[in-house]
Image (cartoon, rainbow, N blue to C red; front, side, top):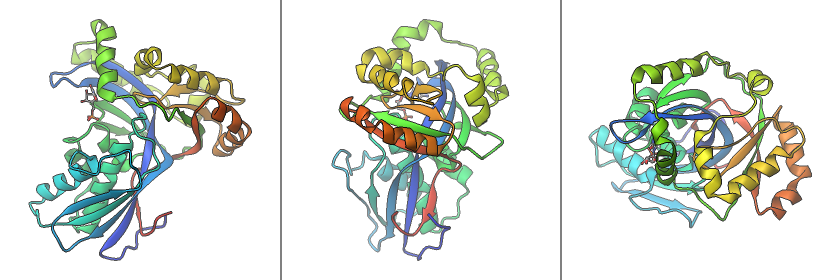
Length: 319
Ligand code: C5P
């Protein structure tokens, strides 16, 4: 998408999916959420949201996907209403069209990134001039992964996922192959609940212990080179719980591990999507092309993706 040159009444926001390069569950918080230590990475699998200012004061949503609700429970509507309330002007209206490409219930933050795009897009369309940091803070109220999705790239995320520490370089050249069995979705609350049942007895309780873990993450080198050279595997704690529950995850990891040149293999978020990292985007595209029949036979949807150094991007046409 090109730099923003929008007509005043209309814009398009591109919302990138994310993968987890690390997901560690540290403990449970007083508010019932889990205390996490993660590294998240934006990828070039994205949804597009077309936003048109409207004369009426309604917020409406249409989508090309029949799998999602377009009612008040959709995070896009929640985000738009949250923003309107924040600035105290419930007269602001918008018609939104969502072109959904990111699979749903996949561990790729599809709903969260749509909410992030709504906040960034409407901030511009409604001329509210809020800073991204203000949008991030606001977005915590409706979802833990939304703050990351606003500026995206590769970031270390603590707390519920909303405390962000940018990694100090921004050129990410790795490629990946992402797979998902279209017949299943994993519910994030169920994954965390089961994880707690299985591993809750090992949770850390003291913030000092959390901080020791956070410092380990901060001192790790999260560059592409270091990921490929030094890491034996990507840690995703939820994989320990979801993998035995969902044979599709095991199947995905097995097929990814067998690909030539696949370096690190992991589940993303609470699954069931899984990915393998490659030296670069071209390698990932080549390997996907060579193995397209294998994925098909295994009943897996597959994408070759690149890493993105940004989250939401604004433009003025659908790609
Ligand atoms: O914040 P979000 O709505 O994305 O979280 C969905 C669910 O995942 C929460 O209701 C909670 O059950 C679980 N969760 C958690 N700890 C986190 C993030 C999510 O237990 N840090």
